[in-house]
Length: 76
Image (cartoon, rainbow, N blue to C red; front, side, top):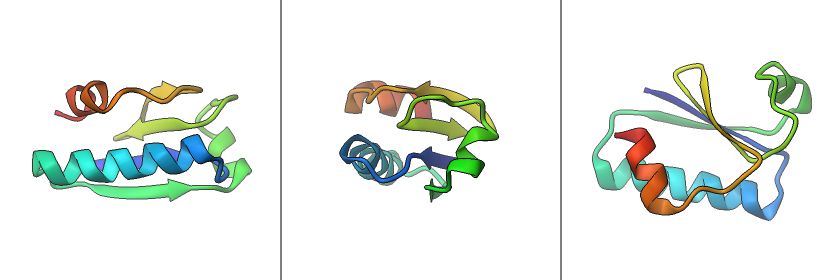
């Protein structure tokens, strides 16, 4: 699984990255989690607001911070 956390470094973006890494570890998912901070790379996903979460090329979250439980459901 290829997971990208899109965000320029705001507190919510950092929180989403941490929650995503924690969820991947807790669920035992074989995944690569990458933080994308370059605005030009972020714009390729048609995301106007960050944080955003992209899993295997599909944008699942944009402009909000999901709860940890909701995040685990998305990833499993």
